[in-house]
Length: 219
Image (cartoon, rainbow, N blue to C red; front, side, top):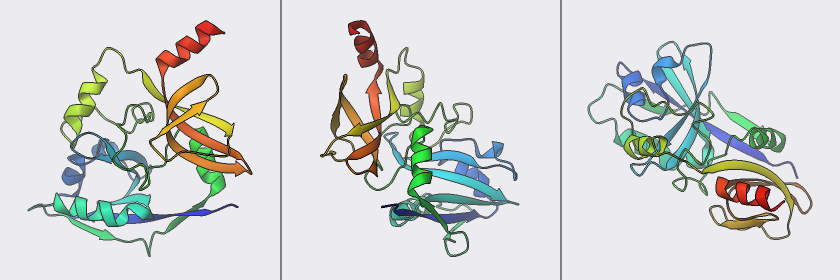
């Protein structure tokens, strides 16, 4: 069945909107012009991704698109950080509603763009999700929530974990964040799963590069 996934849209406006977003999100909001979109993550203080957002700009207002299922969690968190800033955040999903089908989600998965919903929120760091390679993290912009831990990961000599796409035939798929055993690649961590045919699942998993080398050596 080709199920639909709904996305909500938040509008961030006010004199301090850009400065506020610069201190919350992983990407450099100042590099977002009016003709393009920007992929960016909102993380907790431990550097784990709470939401992955597609951002666009109309004049001096910023629009953050994220899965609808995260709205009741992410909106209060962002509002909590406003403090005395001249910023207003509102849900404008009625004006900018986005609905995608399974084919779109599959295309995203094959492009190694993870879906961060309630099951994934707060579980994973940006690096193993491939967000650095996707250009969703800036290390030149200065501080943002979770930046210290994420920057420390960036400056390690090796980051061995990365995101990979597989199509597998299994009757039982574990919960998100749990171990899934794939032939030749045991003990990988499940990030996304999508049933594309009866009994056949497309999956995104975090795989340790050391397992890739071991498999190659054994073949």
